[in-house]
Image 1 (tube, rainbow, N blue to C red):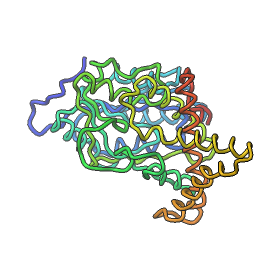
Image 2 (cartoon, rainbow, N blue to C red; image 1 turned 120 degrees about the horizontal axis):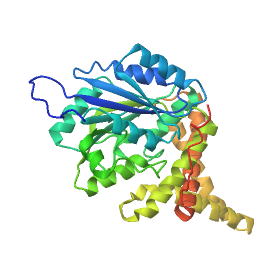
Image 3 (cartoon, rainbow, N blue to C red; image 1 turned 180 degrees about the vertical axis):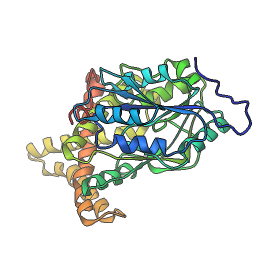
Length: 341
């Protein structure tokens, strides 16, 4: 039985359940857990780690963390699917406010306290803030820049910021558990894009999805080329599938990468047929990417060079994946960048 979300004792913070799906996160898990514990949230809280079948020592790290803090509970997620782990963590959570944090992210100071306050003040069912992408290596910093640029991943407010208000979706999310129960939790048939799909179902039942730029979560993106390709291909596949399912509500920006891929392929066919003007779409794209790399603020020379690799990797992997998902469906496509250590 979940505890009551409303708290009759004056000045006492709401009790919260923090849920975290975990798979092959040995390099990030300890920092992610520390960022939760160090929130110094004034109310009762628990942290539920849904452990997938990791191959990099993540499970041992999780066990050591749980042994050191009784507020951490471990949940077995043998299938390793994010949605399955999240739903089991939600089912086992004790409290009526549920906060999702991923193992490669770290909530900023005050995220829990401010998030609970805003959620209740707005009477929202789902609240999200800004994905504050950061990097350590030159390549990862370039990827982080792409996450925060309208010319990188796109213009969603949790990437680029904006004013507080009703939102299309939310990054990670602070939920009323009643809303999750009302819509049946995450759709376990969806492997990528589950957060967007869940937000649409919450809104369809009259729930409010809210964005607040006051909230920030540090996110560490993939730091290697091969993992970035796998991540964005699988993301594109699922976005194509979900777009086909709900074409009316799909944001127009989702079509930019697939249209780019179509234009480049058509142009290359023209070149093969002797129409050399067909090279223009590809040439124009790389000129634009070079211009972005040259003017990108806050990046070193090495990161600017890496950006020339990162941008086309994101756009073409995502765009090609979108067409695969749109026409063939996503099936059981998974993000293989997290399956192997």
